[in-house]
Amino acid sequence: MTEKNEKTHKTIEQAEQEGKYIRKVRSFVKREGRLTKNQERAINDHWQNMGLNHSNGVIDTQVLFANENPVVLEIGFGMGKSLVEMAKAAPELNFIGIEVHKPGVGACISSAVEENVSNLKVYEHDAIEILADCIPDDTLTTVQLFFPDPWHKKKHHKRRIVSAEFVETIRQKLKVDGVFHMATDWENYAECMLEDMQSAPGYNNLSETNDYVPRPDSRPLTKFENRGQRLGHGVWDLQFAKKA
Ligand SMILES: C[S@@+](CC[C@H](N)C(=O)[O-])C[C@H]1O[C@@H](n2cnc3c(N)ncnc32)[C@H](O)[C@@H]1O
Image 1: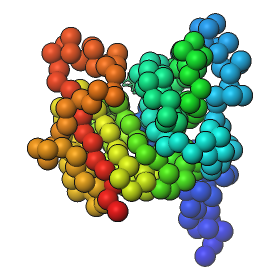
Image 2: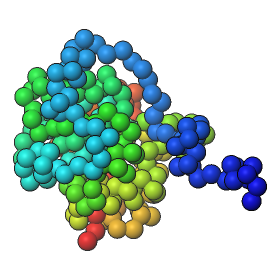
Image 3: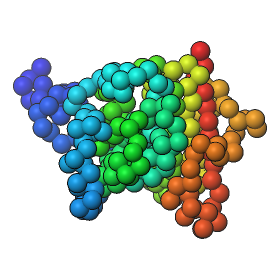
Image 4: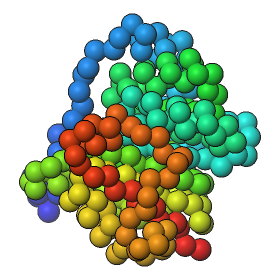
Protein backbone atom coordinates (compact mmCIF):
# COMPACT_ATOMS: atom_id res chain seq x y z
CA MET A 1 0.00 0.00 0.00
CA THR A 2 1.32 3.44 -0.86
CA GLU A 3 1.67 6.11 1.77
CA LYS A 4 -1.16 8.02 0.09
CA ASN A 5 -3.49 5.01 0.33
CA GLU A 6 -2.63 4.48 3.99
CA LYS A 7 -3.65 8.05 4.67
CA THR A 8 -7.04 7.67 3.03
CA HIS A 9 -7.90 4.39 4.84
CA LYS A 10 -8.30 5.66 8.40
CA THR A 11 -10.74 4.47 10.98
CA ILE A 12 -13.10 7.13 12.35
CA GLU A 13 -11.31 6.88 15.71
CA GLN A 14 -7.90 7.52 14.10
CA ALA A 15 -9.22 10.47 12.11
CA GLU A 16 -10.88 11.95 15.21
CA GLN A 17 -7.70 11.57 17.26
CA GLU A 18 -5.83 13.43 14.57
CA GLY A 19 -8.35 16.23 14.79
CA LYS A 20 -9.88 15.63 11.37
CA TYR A 21 -13.46 16.83 11.04
CA ILE A 22 -15.97 13.99 11.24
CA ARG A 23 -19.61 14.78 10.69
CA LYS A 24 -21.76 13.16 13.36
CA VAL A 25 -25.53 13.17 13.22
CA ARG A 26 -26.66 14.41 16.61
CA SER A 27 -30.11 14.68 18.16
CA PHE A 28 -29.51 18.32 19.15
CA VAL A 29 -28.13 21.57 17.87
CA LYS A 30 -25.98 23.21 20.51
CA ARG A 31 -27.62 26.52 21.40
CA GLU A 32 -25.29 28.83 23.23
CA GLY A 33 -28.10 30.44 25.19
CA ARG A 34 -26.84 32.87 27.80
CA LEU A 35 -26.92 31.75 31.43
CA THR A 36 -28.90 33.88 33.86
CA LYS A 37 -27.02 35.01 36.96
CA ASN A 38 -29.04 32.53 38.98
CA GLN A 39 -28.22 29.58 36.67
CA GLU A 40 -24.53 30.53 36.65
CA ARG A 41 -24.44 30.78 40.44
CA ALA A 42 -26.24 27.45 40.82
CA ILE A 43 -23.63 25.73 38.62
CA ASN A 44 -20.67 27.42 40.30
CA ASP A 45 -21.87 26.74 43.82
CA HIS A 46 -23.30 23.24 43.44
CA TRP A 47 -21.51 21.47 40.58
CA GLN A 48 -19.12 19.89 43.06
CA ASN A 49 -22.03 18.20 44.77
CA MET A 50 -24.57 17.70 41.98
CA GLY A 51 -22.58 17.67 38.74
CA LEU A 52 -21.24 14.58 37.00
CA ASN A 53 -18.47 14.75 34.41
CA HIS A 54 -18.20 12.64 31.27
CA SER A 55 -14.41 12.67 31.67
CA ASN A 56 -14.69 10.70 34.94
CA GLY A 57 -15.84 7.62 33.04
CA VAL A 58 -17.92 4.76 34.42
CA ILE A 59 -19.89 5.61 37.56
CA ASP A 60 -20.72 3.50 40.61
CA THR A 61 -24.20 4.68 41.58
CA GLN A 62 -24.00 3.24 45.11
CA VAL A 63 -20.84 5.24 45.79
CA LEU A 64 -22.22 8.38 44.11
CA PHE A 65 -25.41 8.49 46.15
CA ALA A 66 -24.00 6.67 49.21
CA ASN A 67 -26.98 4.30 49.20
CA GLU A 68 -28.38 1.33 47.28
CA ASN A 69 -31.62 2.96 46.15
CA PRO A 70 -32.88 2.22 42.62
CA VAL A 71 -31.67 4.64 39.95
CA VAL A 72 -33.82 6.56 37.44
CA LEU A 73 -32.09 8.15 34.43
CA GLU A 74 -33.72 11.01 32.51
CA ILE A 75 -32.44 11.97 29.08
CA GLY A 76 -32.98 15.55 27.81
CA PHE A 77 -34.60 17.06 30.90
CA GLY A 78 -34.90 20.57 29.42
CA MET A 79 -35.11 23.06 32.31
CA GLY A 80 -35.47 20.16 34.77
CA LYS A 81 -38.81 21.20 36.19
CA SER A 82 -40.47 17.79 36.01
CA LEU A 83 -37.24 15.97 36.94
CA VAL A 84 -36.88 17.99 40.16
CA GLU A 85 -40.58 17.45 40.91
CA MET A 86 -40.19 13.68 40.45
CA ALA A 87 -37.01 13.52 42.54
CA LYS A 88 -38.67 15.48 45.33
CA ALA A 89 -41.72 13.20 45.28
CA ALA A 90 -39.61 10.01 45.40
CA PRO A 91 -36.79 10.32 47.97
CA GLU A 92 -36.54 6.50 47.97
CA LEU A 93 -35.10 6.69 44.43
CA ASN A 94 -31.91 8.21 43.01
CA PHE A 95 -32.15 10.36 39.87
CA ILE A 96 -29.55 11.13 37.20
CA GLY A 97 -30.39 13.71 34.55
CA ILE A 98 -28.58 14.32 31.26
CA GLU A 99 -29.00 17.53 29.25
CA VAL A 100 -26.80 19.28 26.68
CA HIS A 101 -28.29 22.76 27.11
CA LYS A 102 -26.28 24.52 29.83
CA PRO A 103 -28.98 27.02 30.90
CA GLY A 104 -31.28 24.00 31.42
CA VAL A 105 -28.66 22.35 33.60
CA GLY A 106 -28.27 25.58 35.63
CA ALA A 107 -32.04 25.94 35.98
CA CYS A 108 -32.36 22.32 37.11
CA ILE A 109 -29.63 22.63 39.76
CA SER A 110 -31.12 25.90 40.96
CA SER A 111 -34.63 24.37 41.42
CA ALA A 112 -33.19 21.25 43.06
CA VAL A 113 -31.34 23.41 45.61
CA GLU A 114 -34.42 25.54 46.18
CA GLU A 115 -36.53 22.41 46.76
CA ASN A 116 -33.90 20.77 49.00
CA VAL A 117 -33.61 17.82 46.64
CA SER A 118 -30.53 15.72 47.41
CA ASN A 119 -31.25 12.54 45.39
CA LEU A 120 -30.42 14.09 42.00
CA LYS A 121 -27.20 14.46 39.99
CA VAL A 122 -26.78 15.85 36.48
CA TYR A 123 -24.55 15.65 33.43
CA GLU A 124 -24.17 18.50 30.93
CA HIS A 125 -23.27 16.32 27.95
CA ASP A 126 -24.58 14.30 24.99
CA ALA A 127 -26.62 11.41 26.42
CA ILE A 128 -25.37 9.05 23.70
CA GLU A 129 -21.81 9.46 24.96
CA ILE A 130 -22.83 9.22 28.63
CA LEU A 131 -24.63 5.93 27.94
CA ALA A 132 -21.61 4.57 26.09
CA ASP A 133 -18.90 5.74 28.49
CA CYS A 134 -20.36 6.27 31.98
CA ILE A 135 -23.44 4.13 32.72
CA PRO A 136 -22.73 0.49 33.59
CA ASP A 137 -24.96 -2.23 32.08
CA ASP A 138 -27.86 -3.68 34.14
CA THR A 139 -28.03 -0.80 36.63
CA LEU A 140 -31.08 1.35 35.92
CA THR A 141 -34.60 0.85 37.27
CA THR A 142 -36.14 3.40 34.89
CA VAL A 143 -35.01 5.36 31.86
CA GLN A 144 -37.23 8.29 30.96
CA LEU A 145 -37.26 10.25 27.73
CA PHE A 146 -39.95 12.92 27.77
CA PHE A 147 -40.73 14.97 24.68
CA PRO A 148 -37.48 14.41 22.79
CA ASP A 149 -36.96 16.83 19.89
CA PRO A 150 -39.32 15.47 17.20
CA TRP A 151 -37.34 16.70 14.18
CA HIS A 152 -40.54 17.10 12.19
CA LYS A 153 -39.16 17.13 8.64
CA LYS A 154 -38.57 13.76 7.02
CA LYS A 155 -35.04 14.73 5.96
CA HIS A 156 -34.23 15.34 9.65
CA HIS A 157 -35.68 12.08 10.99
CA LYS A 158 -32.13 10.69 11.16
CA ARG A 159 -31.52 13.18 14.00
CA ARG A 160 -34.22 11.66 16.19
CA ILE A 161 -32.65 10.17 19.30
CA VAL A 162 -34.90 7.09 19.25
CA SER A 163 -33.63 4.42 16.85
CA ALA A 164 -33.23 0.65 16.89
CA GLU A 165 -29.65 1.11 18.12
CA PHE A 166 -30.69 3.54 20.87
CA VAL A 167 -33.42 1.29 22.29
CA GLU A 168 -30.97 -1.61 22.39
CA THR A 169 -28.47 0.55 24.30
CA ILE A 170 -31.19 1.47 26.79
CA ARG A 171 -32.10 -2.22 27.19
CA GLN A 172 -28.51 -3.00 28.10
CA LYS A 173 -28.44 -0.29 30.77
CA LEU A 174 -31.74 -1.36 32.40
CA LYS A 175 -32.01 -4.01 35.10
CA VAL A 176 -34.31 -6.94 34.38
CA ASP A 177 -37.90 -5.62 34.77
CA GLY A 178 -36.55 -2.06 34.52
CA VAL A 179 -38.81 0.24 32.49
CA PHE A 180 -38.09 2.44 29.49
CA HIS A 181 -40.69 5.25 29.56
CA MET A 182 -41.08 7.59 26.59
CA ALA A 183 -43.59 10.36 25.92
CA THR A 184 -44.13 12.54 22.87
CA ASP A 185 -46.76 14.92 21.52
CA TRP A 186 -45.83 14.19 17.90
CA GLU A 187 -47.90 11.34 16.49
CA ASN A 188 -45.48 10.27 13.78
CA TYR A 189 -42.65 10.08 16.35
CA ALA A 190 -44.90 8.03 18.68
CA GLU A 191 -45.55 5.58 15.84
CA CYS A 192 -41.84 5.28 15.06
CA MET A 193 -41.03 4.76 18.77
CA LEU A 194 -43.65 2.02 18.95
CA GLU A 195 -42.29 0.35 15.82
CA ASP A 196 -38.70 0.43 17.14
CA MET A 197 -39.79 -0.97 20.52
CA GLN A 198 -41.97 -3.70 19.02
CA SER A 199 -39.16 -4.90 16.78
CA ALA A 200 -36.54 -4.76 19.53
CA PRO A 201 -35.85 -8.10 21.18
CA GLY A 202 -35.88 -8.25 24.98
CA TYR A 203 -38.75 -5.92 25.89
CA ASN A 204 -42.35 -6.44 27.08
CA ASN A 205 -44.91 -3.75 26.25
CA LEU A 206 -46.67 -2.69 29.48
CA SER A 207 -49.65 -1.40 27.49
CA GLU A 208 -52.87 -3.36 27.93
CA THR A 209 -53.74 -2.54 24.32
CA ASN A 210 -50.27 -3.45 23.08
CA ASP A 211 -49.50 0.13 22.04
CA TYR A 212 -49.60 3.16 24.36
CA VAL A 213 -50.19 3.57 28.12
CA PRO A 214 -52.14 6.31 29.92
CA ARG A 215 -49.88 8.99 31.46
CA PRO A 216 -48.77 7.55 34.80
CA ASP A 217 -49.34 9.84 37.82
CA SER A 218 -45.60 9.76 38.44
CA ARG A 219 -44.96 11.81 35.28
CA PRO A 220 -45.71 15.49 35.91
CA LEU A 221 -47.07 17.60 33.04
CA THR A 222 -44.15 19.31 31.32
CA LYS A 223 -43.99 22.70 29.60
CA PHE A 224 -43.92 20.96 26.22
CA GLU A 225 -46.95 18.86 27.08
CA ASN A 226 -48.92 21.89 28.23
CA ARG A 227 -48.06 23.61 24.98
CA GLY A 228 -49.02 20.52 22.98
CA GLN A 229 -52.37 20.40 24.72
CA ARG A 230 -53.00 24.07 23.97
CA LEU A 231 -52.30 23.36 20.31
CA GLY A 232 -54.74 20.47 20.40
CA HIS A 233 -52.05 17.79 20.03
CA GLY A 234 -52.39 14.40 21.64
CA VAL A 235 -49.74 12.92 23.92
CA TRP A 236 -48.50 9.35 23.69
CA ASP A 237 -46.76 7.51 26.55
CA LEU A 238 -44.93 4.23 25.96
CA GLN A 239 -43.64 1.93 28.70
CA PHE A 240 -41.65 -1.21 28.00
CA ALA A 241 -40.00 -3.48 30.58
CA LYS A 242 -36.74 -5.35 30.05
CA LYS A 243 -37.24 -9.10 29.84
CA ALA A 244 -35.15 -11.52 31.89
C1 LIG B 1 -38.04 19.19 23.29
S1 LIG B 1 -36.98 19.30 24.66
C2 LIG B 1 -37.90 18.53 25.99
C3 LIG B 1 -37.39 18.89 27.36
C4 LIG B 1 -38.11 18.22 28.55
N1 LIG B 1 -37.95 16.78 28.54
C5 LIG B 1 -39.57 18.61 28.61
O1 LIG B 1 -40.42 17.73 28.36
O2 LIG B 1 -39.86 19.78 28.88
C6 LIG B 1 -35.72 18.11 24.31
C7 LIG B 1 -34.47 18.30 25.15
O3 LIG B 1 -33.56 17.24 24.90
C8 LIG B 1 -32.23 17.76 24.89
N2 LIG B 1 -31.40 16.83 24.11
C9 LIG B 1 -31.54 16.49 22.81
N3 LIG B 1 -30.63 15.58 22.46
C10 LIG B 1 -29.88 15.31 23.57
C11 LIG B 1 -28.79 14.45 23.83
N4 LIG B 1 -28.26 13.67 22.88
N5 LIG B 1 -28.27 14.43 25.08
C12 LIG B 1 -28.81 15.21 26.06
N6 LIG B 1 -29.84 16.05 25.87
C13 LIG B 1 -30.38 16.09 24.64
C14 LIG B 1 -32.39 19.13 24.26
O4 LIG B 1 -31.33 20.00 24.61
C15 LIG B 1 -33.74 19.59 24.85
O5 LIG B 1 -33.55 20.30 26.06
